[in-house]
Image 1 (cartoon, rainbow, N blue to C red):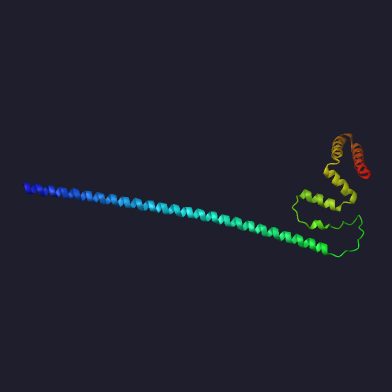
Image 2 (image 1 turned 180 degrees about the vertical axis):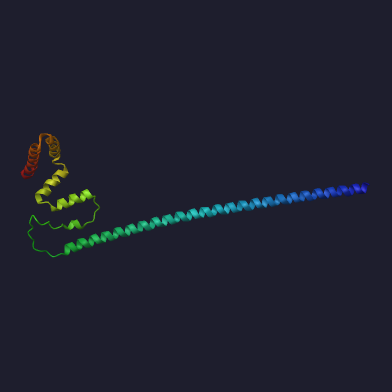
Amino acid sequence: MPAAKKTATAAKTAAATKKTATAAKKTTTAAKTATAAKKTATAAKKTATAAKTATAAKKTATTVKTAAAAKKTATAAKKTATTAKTATAKKPATTAKKTTAAKKPATPASANTSMKVTAAEKKLIEAYRGATGDQKKISLKVLKGEYADTSLKLLDSVGGGIGAGAEGIGDSIGETLGNLLGGLLGK
């Protein structure tokens, strides 16, 4: 019986060793799987970082291209303006023509300069270009604020003159315009 007991003990030991070896093998496999997963995650992170860097580089390149295009446009506009000035300067002198009040005055050379204006500013420019010399002087003084008090009185009297009737408005406007013209002619 002792030999059978030894054999049984040896069998148990062999079975335990086999179980331990299997468990060790599973642990090793799990460790390898974890390492591989960690490597995959690191590679994915590097790929994402590279993609972000590429996107940032692309945005920078686009910004540089936009700036270069804007510079080219500005240079072209400057060349066009220089060419226009040169062409204007090279025109031969012509005899001056008399203009009548019915005709619009010739557009000045500076009118060819491009400028963004609002609709209200455009109306002011068109009215100014169509005005006579005296009208231009008066309008400039009004815009500069030299007749600010007179303009306010005019608006005040028109507002107050409505209650007084059309006669009160006419008198107020006539007096204010007389002050404007008198101030212009007196200077």
